[in-house]
Image (tube, one colour):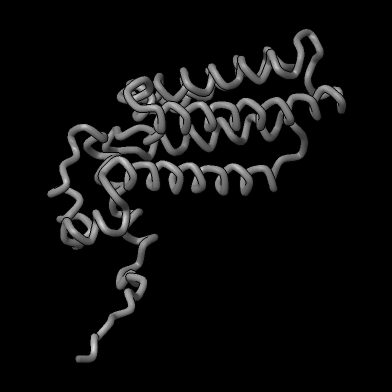
Length: 201
């Protein structure tokens, strides 16, 4: 008697993964991680539960993919902003204005997905903590390079080291984004940016 055999073929995704992640980002952004149910994700993406589990593993794994996609989105925006910068201090100002304009256009007061994640889950999961730490280090290093270049070109003073100013800018940006949740007056936000920059000049 002949035995039949089957070859397990790799599962192919029959949906647009980038689109699904974008749809999931909207849900997590609106409701936060803990308040988002699998049913919310099913309704938002149009996928059934088994498809989500087979493709992403679990809700946390999908959330991690959303965080990485959201982070990449901001890296691209920041790099685009830098193309118009005349020097380092101008680049820093443009970055703060980029965030200000986003805050002013955030009519639903959703804030930043990554900042929201930090307040909700920073110490709840090792993978989340690792991602947030990596994102923080990337931003600080990004500012440090800008400051070092600005100090070299004498557009930024040398009263503090590039790393000290980078930490200052990072904490200022975090506070600025939190402030923008309740203060929506453009002149007030511009004044905050001006005060932050005056420390560097």
